[in-house]
Image (tube, rainbow, N blue to C red; front, side, top):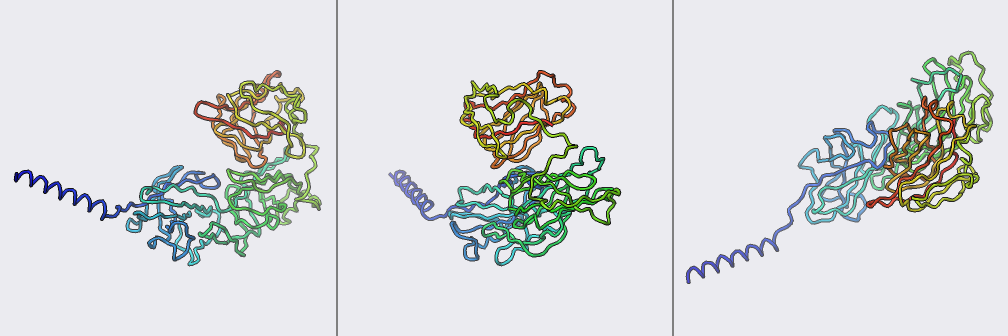
Length: 487
């Protein structure tokens, strides 16, 4: 009897303690860590990868509120988080453990930026200065994340680029014997200062201007300024100097414009493109420019050409000394789809004619690719004279999901992989279809033949292949292809 009472007493105490634990205690706090990636490549030394000791600044906000003093969660204001390892995804922890953000049962939002700065103003503005392009961290990144709780202490952040990039590619005109390696490229009269609003991620340009020297042909510039107000100055290693002003192109955050400039002994032939590295499409166009060389530079005794009054606004006239691209095969401009023998029996894609890049016609392929297949195999035209050429190029616009395109030139294989911007392909050992296409506007794809062109037989074909669906992947295409040429 005494034993029975003792057991009942212990059972009652156990139930009491369990009830107290379930009803009277709070959830233990969890310290927040961040897994961070960069959405698209632009200028980082390792492209989309973080470097060891990279630091981000983090704000914790009460859910659904705008960044302001009153909305900050438990004074977690501009907390410095650091990653110790390099890689595509950085694992960030609070630099000071006592400042780590901790969550219990609240719902919290986050705002983050890179690189960390202790100079953020009371209005939550991050100062920007791009005057010195060699300084690490001028490529400003910004990210947000909503609705996290104690059950989700590892927060995944995807950062986007806030700044603009402008890249200059120099090419010597054939036969000019100009050496463009080690050229110095300067953006004259460019804005150097501004601010990033951490409230909404917008960049406000300042008023300070200076000459900005590019690094490896590229410069990070403030969005909102017009390239027509900037002069690009090029000084070759031997002292020859060129200056050229682009047409109107208002720079946008997260976008990259590439200017490909062909240098002659007396001027520049410019092909300006909105060439994007994984971002939305920038503005671009074509122009023939004859800049006035610097009068103090060594220009080899040549007389500067008369400036073209329509520079920056008109399509260049073909230089009679420069061979013009030729169609690779009959129908390669897609003006007559019936000239192309389609395969496509396995892929079962819809193929139709559509509007092309410059008012001509393009090939539009759409639908679900049922299997990997040749879209077409076309004999390379004798007029193309492929053994004496170095590259094949075409234009592409649109999207693909899960998989992408591959090409054969005779026995040479070229794989597109991921494509969001102008892209140059070298030969590979076999056809591969990994990657996706996401080009909001026309981008140029170039197949580099090089010395292998001489080995391509006269009866070779150009094969256009599409990656098809698998048991685990549905592959859909909505692509436009235009002007397959050789030069």
